[in-house]
Image (cartoon, rainbow, N blue to C red; front, side, top):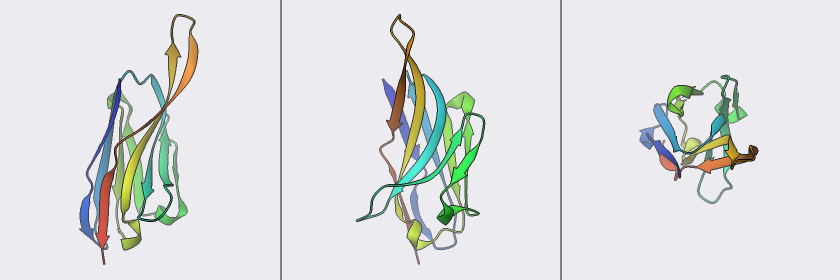
Length: 125
């Protein structure tokens, strides 16, 4: 069984900072990518940032220069440091974990795609 648990959300004033954490555990296989998505009320879920197992990072343009994603491979944990928060950053933030899993005795490889339950981030103006 796989668990993906986020923490660190909350209420913050515009210009403030928050740090989100996400820990993956269980029979998750070999993680190759960890990322963050967010969903604001009435909008579709959007990708925010991700990081590969080698530390390569990618960000959506709207958070570049303000958010920093990092990870601890040994602990299967990913972080999102959010600075200079804006009201438009208000959303539920979801952690996504992608892995490769060896299935059965044949050695075949399956893709794992796991999500956390989400953590609310609210930024007031």
